[in-house]
Image (cartoon, rainbow, N blue to C red; front, side, top):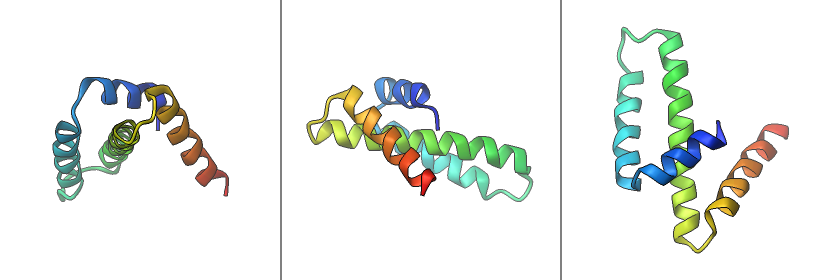
Length: 82
């Protein structure tokens, strides 16, 4: 998870585009010939896209972009520390 990447994805893409991309990446990970390294890279992209989708949702609910990004980052870091 990289907050600058999530910010870029949030600012430059609609939720619909992000969801379509997410579906493609998930399908890609299911192919038999995909290496573990490729799955790791796709997994990182999936994580960042999911983060951008959550930020879109928080902003839709009234949060300021900066606060939504910070809240998402803190929530993820908090779940890792547990």
